[in-house]
Image (cartoon, rainbow over all chains, first blue to last red; front, side, top):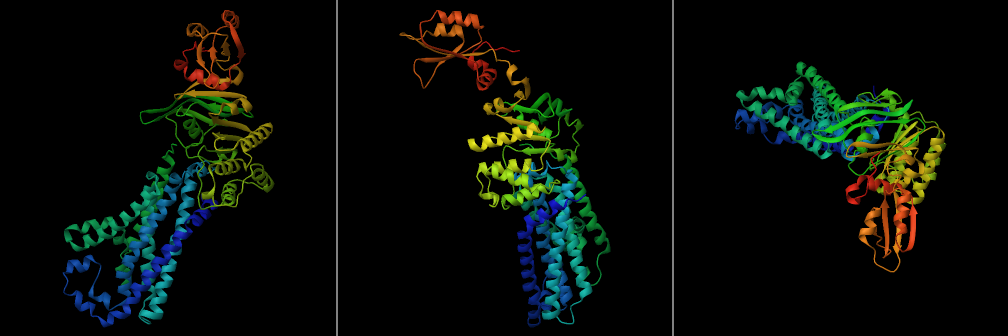
Length: 267
Length: 304
């Protein structure tokens, strides 16, 4: 069901963007997580107590975060890490499908002795490999910074493993959504715009829904809610989210495959 | 068995017609030309054969088998050269050839190298640096590398210089001698006359002719080149012969497309005082033009 030729080529074609995004995320984490060492000099916990509770919650913050490296990394650093990584995941997945129509390589790839299902699944496999690589890199860098620099002895490896695992699952879900929509988009530029838009949409939706009780139901529409990185950082990962996020990924891939099989490619 | 068979094949884009009830059968081992003006439906037909489009109605069969809805192994026997060749710009030509090769069981490097040599193609450059002609060469190589039993080519000669085009047709002829079926669309009628066993003509989405080149309607058309001796041409006299026009590059010379029977044509010409006369069979291009633009020609079109 997977064609290694396509998977290898897709990884090769997207190698540069993977390295750039991995580097960007690593640098963001390095700076953001690294800044925890300066927290002691500024009493952030006291400072944010003056803020309205809704705003603090909406921004994903709590006073405890500034005193506990695990909550800080899971609830704040990775909140933005997930925003960036989910945008990349959607750009990658959407681009893999839209690019062939945009470049005109449909005539090269889709006239080969392969079903469109195999083409889709081969691309999905490349996506999986690349997103897993990204999160392994992020996990290793976070762990190294946490253990050797920021908070030796306090950095909880188990809790942080869950934070990164939930981040990975959320990115897979984001990719699944992009795979579902991409067959409807014929331009890479279009799928990139959609990825950025959806990435911020999920992020803002989760923040706004956290601020107002009346809008709480909107959180169910955001992958950030199911990832619940703060919960994972507290050692209480959202178990339902661990099931729902892969289900979104699989459902997205299935929907995308159905659409791709029905898609027509006029000149 | 037919390599390609379409039955009442119809494709609409919404309410716009693509092709209507196109039926044709291409025999295995045949070189089949598919000709028609831009927008006639050639590319739509080819895309239906390749499963890039789904028919609105009708049927497509390759080697006697219906095309599976989502493509598949049937295309192991097919090679395709698109009219607009677009590949991954950051790959080199060689990388693309290897990518294409990976879809088939091709153990023979020698054949690929032979194609590269004969088409004078440099495979070690990035695709984004290739000219249109070089991309076309790459398109031909990637379509032929697995020695397909059916080659579908959309305007294969476009963008190639005359020497390479000649070489490409030599390769096609050689492959055809080994039983490869060649189905190609073109508007370069010289190519059709050169290698096609049969042709299909399509106009406004419908087939107007399927058969041997020699039996094309319009083969009874005569091309008369003449020059009157010592006096101005009479438009009335020329009009009796057929549609006439003065040859731009040879003032005083007229070119007449005539459907008059030979004896009547000779009798009419006998009444003129002529300085020059030449009567020839029409080229395929002239027939093509006459069939597609009868109103412009005003000739007595044979609608057989």
